Amino acid sequence: NAGVTQTPKFQVLKTGQSMTLQCAQDMNHEYMSWYRQDPGMGLRLIHYSVGAGITDQGEVPNGYNVSRSTTEDFPLRLLSAAPSQTSVYFCASTQSANRGLYGYTFGSGTRLTVV
Amino acid sequence: AQSVTQLGSHVSVSEGALVLLRCNYSSSVPPYLFWYVQYPNQGLQLLLKYTTGATLVKGINGFEAEFKKSETSFHLTKPSAHMSDAAEYFCAVSENPPGFGNEKLTFGTGTRLTIIP
Image (cartoon, rainbow over all chains, first blue to last red; front, side, top):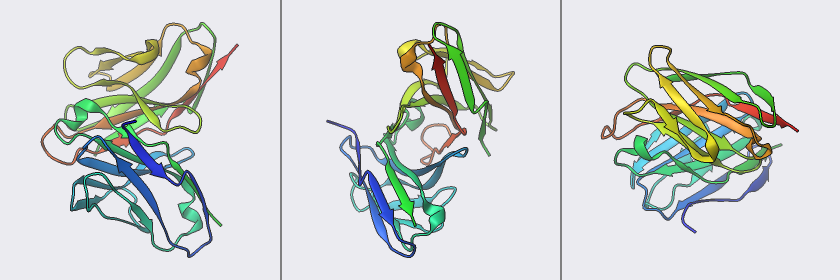
């Protein structure tokens, strides 16, 4: 089925560990982004990409890295996990042209707990 | 900078009653406005959107929203609530017009809708 696939769905990390959250889409969308969702704070943009080889920071980029080597994949790396990074992470994508017209397609999320 | 304010983090309505979820935005340019719905343990789904043209927008599941520029509002309504409407609803704004290459979606903090049987 076409859409945005995120793995894993759940993850528990110890403080200081690193990991990569995977995001893949098969809709040939050029724009991809990562959000974190925290209670009472809505969704906040971490990083985004407007195409392969191009990434930029969002509202809350500290502690996270991204890369975009292909159109399909946009992994999010936590370099040294901290309890403050406990959150639900969503990947979203959309077509690049007139992207405001189409809205975003979201993955089902990764629930991360850092202990 | 663009921003979104959703009044009421929790709203409860009886089944069959009117649903009204409030959203006000701030934007320095004509906005694109969206409502997304999130069911438990799922990602967000697009409910409806306003870009240009008719200010009353109809979405899925009987929801609609009206863009009121003078009030900078985009409230979501449904005439008769159903139990399946229980979810969290997010209003969002995108400021840049198409073609600029980096439209960002700014979300409100969400409103959890509970339906009372």
